[in-house]
Image 1 (cartoon, rainbow, N blue to C red):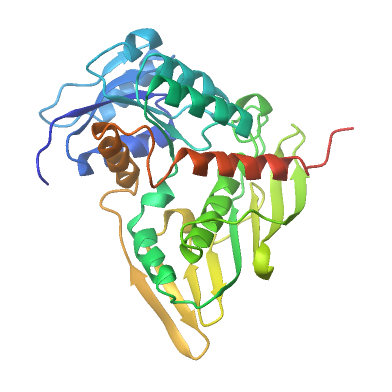
Image 2: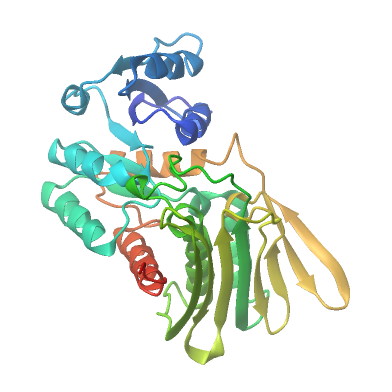
Length: 339
């Protein structure tokens, strides 16, 4: 790795997903965990100690958000709180002029997302949704193959993202106050990869669905425990998916073409390999592993964009985030309404 000027990251919300972020930092030249904002000081201290690297000072831990955001030594913040808190922290960071990389979903409605994008542009501050799948080596390779016509004309897509989760009304997955529900939490990946495939096959442009079929299974707390969706696009192309907290699955994604299919056979959102499948030949497997854990791609992209003075990533632009939020709004509008 070449040495670059240190890039100091502040983490807001040292929970589970923030561990993956910190674990990937050594793969990105210059990247360093410099500060942690945590409401629970002991949790913040444990996180900082866990991810201290040899020869580096331990990250500073604080419960003073304004102080962290006004610290000129912090180059950007990564927000990893529950979805329900994303908006307030993004807004505070942008108002303070601090670049933001925020976990998906950026927020929970397109209207709120648009307001934050407008604020980022008004303030001239970088903002990016941390949708790590977009930056994985397997997707870079698969994208080239799709653009080169490896599957012929696109006909359909299908995918699942399901796992069995014990119902706990206080857990963020099931708690409406924490923006629980399977669509926001995991279904966003089914939608994001649907959009990605359509973009590869249509010169970078994703058509809007002309119809949606939606069935949702609601939990006692009122959040969606599982969602089944079929999206219909021009030309007869469809994307069918199921996301849910109530079933076990290998969680594959497949794009069916006129000549072949391209398949991420397991955990498609974090794939390190894919297969090209034709009827009369064994599946051709192509591997493209992580450097560390897969988060290094989005971190490197954010750092490069911030250093270049960009306000958004060309690989995960504001328009993509807003389009995903719009699709989720439209799907949620078809959920059964409480009596």
